[in-house]
Image 1: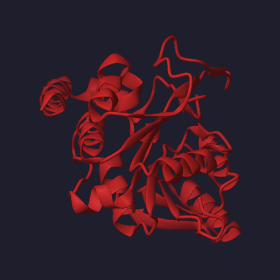
Image 2 (image 1 turned 180 degrees about the vertical axis):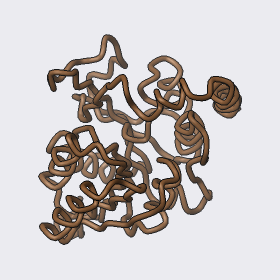
Image 3 (image 1 turned 135 degrees about the vertical axis):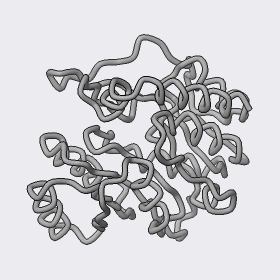
Length: 248
């Protein structure tokens, strides 16, 4: 970044549906970023009164937080709602029960500006039931941050399935707006459609080495897991549709 060049605004979009036990540390991991020019857009997807009360309190504590409420409609609707309200140059999606490293935004924005890239990808780790940080078993062997081709970015999804989630990357907002990219609604495998689409429309992509920078909480009672078991036929239909879109 040039010395007098203003830091671009980052819009962080976080859908919330209860999960109050994990919500506070997730929000704090955003607010404690070493990069301060951000807005945290929390979309309440029809949470209970206790969660709504907490969100009101936390919003009053930091002017960068913006709360929007919607009738329960699912994560994709909440993400699309947040995206439509975002004012940042860059968009980042985060789940409400995970954590991000303190320097993720600072390092990402610096590398994006230096490389003049439109999108940055980074690796993630896991949080186990004891809240311990666990490295993934394997991953891309990038010793240094580097520009990668669209084909290489898409291959990350195929080789390492964790790279399909929107919390694995930052992207310029205009990638979404100019190409009318949104998250498919009423589907289980929406990320398998949205992520390859975003990657495919990015002019230049850079990989941030040295991670993990995001910590994913793996839980057996996740929303996706519940959808899997409630409607197996719909799950299979959505999966094949997503895989076909990914192949295209």
